[in-house]
Image 1 (spheres, rainbow, N blue to C red):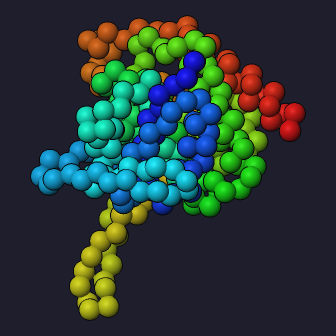
Image 2: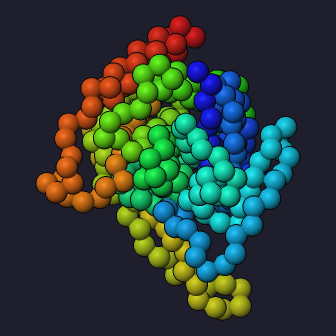
Length: 272
């Protein structure tokens, strides 16, 4: 089966994660790349309402890259509505920095672009990585791990299809190139305790900078990511209370997906 794959992100076209993701995905079919022309980290589920949008094509990394002067959500809609691309699956990322916790899920342009795709009925995967800079994506051992995990996700999708009751899957990759396995633990609620720090510029003008302290709660998605596991979180675009949202137990196919990733990752990286 040859897939039609849409690749979006929130880090723009300059990130070294873009050619890495394209290489990992292109072996499974046709890949269309549409990304913001400038980084949009922390943009969440925003879209552009008050200015015209322009889509142009760049040639970088030997890839045809479409850039838009909008948000990651705009990038998804540009692919479908402007370019007429109807993907079998949408990948968003790989993000520079992890996106564990409900706080980060809601803030992340990477995750929310995938959520938007899921909202409109497209299977979608958000991929984030617990790295500080995109230079990590050029490390051969780390790049190999990313490609292998992306490959396993696509292989499962081709063989078994998508999951009933799941709109989007958020995958967080650990900082290590030798993950211990795959888990799907509870999602931490708050990742950062934020505050605005007052500062003064050289001209004596007061300004404020967002700072904060990070929090890791034992037994959560953040905790297991920091312990070296690939963390997989199923998401639904429905934010209503479960008593009225029609939620049920996770589909058995999703549990099979976790077991598939876990067994292959453990076997693969133990053998390396």
